[in-house]
Structure formats: C-alpha cells, structure tokens
Amino acid sequence: MALRDGLVYGVRVRLLLFLKGGIGDVVFALPLIADLRRAFPDAVLCALTHDQGADVLGMCPAVDQVFRLGPMSSRWRVGDALAALDGPFDVALTPTRSPRAGYLLLRTGATTRVGFATGLERFFFTHRARGGFEVVFSRRFQRLAEALGVSPGVEAAPLRVPPPDQESARARLRALGWDGVRPLVSIHIGGGWPTKRWPEAHVAALAARLGTEGEQALLVGGVEDQERGRRVAEGSGALVSAGGPVSEALAELSLCQASVGVDSGLSHASAALGVPTLQLFGPNDPRSVIPLPHQELRWLGLSCQPCNRRGKKACPLGHHACLRELGPEDAHRSLAQLRARVAAAGHRAG
Image (tube, rainbow, N blue to C red):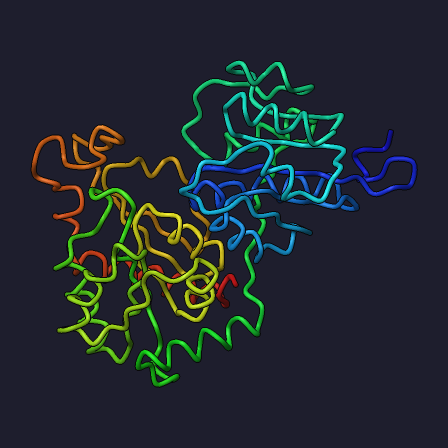
C-alpha cells in the first residue's frame, strides 16, 4: 500500500482532518496540514470544521476541500457531521480529545484513524499520537503526523486570499471611509478573554499616532467589539470593521501593511497571511507560538506571567499590568522595528 505517495492501487487517497476549538486552534493546525501535504502530495486532503474555521481553511491552498459543521458556538452531533461530509475516507485524523470525535472518525469508514493516546477516544484509533504536555500548540498537533511516520516540518501551510475576495474587501473598506491609498494597519481590539484585550486607551493612542504618520488604523474584532471600536474611532480617525464573517476579516487583513494584535485567532491568521504582525501577550505564554519571520511576539515577562486560564476573566492580582504597562509607544516602536526587519529581508512574506 503506497500510502506515503497519496495513492492506493492507483487511486487517490482521501484524508480527512477534523478540527474544533477556536480560530487560533485552526491556524495552529497549518504546520500539520503542511506535513500531510508534503507526505501525501497526491492525496485529496479535506477538512471538517466549524464555519469560522472553514473560512480560514478555505483560504489554504494545501486543503482541497473544506466541509462545514455549523457555527463555532453550536454543539455538534456525529450525525450532522457525517451528513456534511462527502465520504468515504481512507485516513482520518483529529486533535480533538473526546469519545465523540473518535466515534466520528470510525463512522467515516477510514481504515486508518489517528488521534491522541489519551482518554477513551483512543480505542477508536488505529494510530495513536503520544500524549503528554507540549507548550507549542502547533507541535502538539504535528504529533498526529508523527503517528503516521511523518517527520514534522518547520513550515506552516500558508493562507492566500483570492483576488476577487480582496476586491470585495477594498470595496467594503472604501464604503467605511478608506480612500484606497493610505496604508492600512490593523489593530485587533478584541481578544476573546477580557484579559487578553489591549486597553482601549492604548488602542486609541496607537491609532491616532498612525494617523499622524499618514497611515490609517483598521480596527478588527468580533461583534462584541463593535462598540469599543466606535469609541476608539471617534478620536483617532480609525476605520471599524468588527463583527463580520471571518472570511471578510481575513480578506481585509490581507490588504494591510502591518497588523497589531493580541493572542487571538485573527492575529495568528494575520501572520499566516504573510502580514507583518506584532502580537501583544498578556495572560498567556508566548512560548506556545513559534513566530514566523514576519511575526513578533511582545510581552513584559512579569513575575505573574503567564497566569493563563486563572486570569481569563479578570487579573488575579487586580492590576492587569501585563498589558496595561505595555503601552502604545512600546507597541509603536516594536512595530516599526518589525516592519524595518521585514523590509530589509526584501519582501513581504505573503
């Protein structure tokens, strides 16, 4: 069986990757996707994920087909997942740790099923990835490829926005007030957890600073960030594009000259698009991310960092110094250094 060539008796192998979690988890699967594509170049590589994740992977050329499971916030059922698929599959993989995910892989008909060797779901798998703690999220996912005998690579599968989607994004931004000429720099005003968010006053100060330098800030985020965006825009001249579909946000990010974000899915996706991206870390550990050459991770390294999920809703010590003391001047300086480094390399990654 010539599985490593992506063929079995001359027929193209069909691989399925089932992903849950947040947008960031989908982005962290891009190195795994690159490993699978490198190892099985002739295979049909498919992904099943929630709608927001599908918006991301729909812009990944390494993935041949993406199936949608419904909104990220909805509870998924095995029957609905099977109905969404165009099977059968030969190989199915998932980093999701639940018996339901393992049972789904079994029901796909795949004779090779790969997951982690922890929990009851392991009994559904023919190949088990080693468990244990791993700081780097993407390396944790790459253990699935290792279970198939594939050595992990250092490259991540890139994201590419199709030209028609970019043209639609240009039209949306012009409708918001962009003149189509001023360079855009995105700033993520959300972050999921309240303690991941950069203080609103810092966002406003950086947006105003960019405006005085002939650039325009583009404020991105979720529906819950729209009001914060409007407040920032009032005094800074920034554009607010928060709350739209992920696919639209990615198309708009691809038009930006640079991006300032936090530890969020959109910010990680910005880097995957090739945009020079500065990410400001507060409660979480930046060592969980292996930065791309055009990506800079900034944190203060305080004695209380990282507090992780203990500080999800509020700073355990009540001061939120990890992001409050990481001010707009610091971010502006770090962003300028990053952009200079990318320019010196001769080209933008995307």
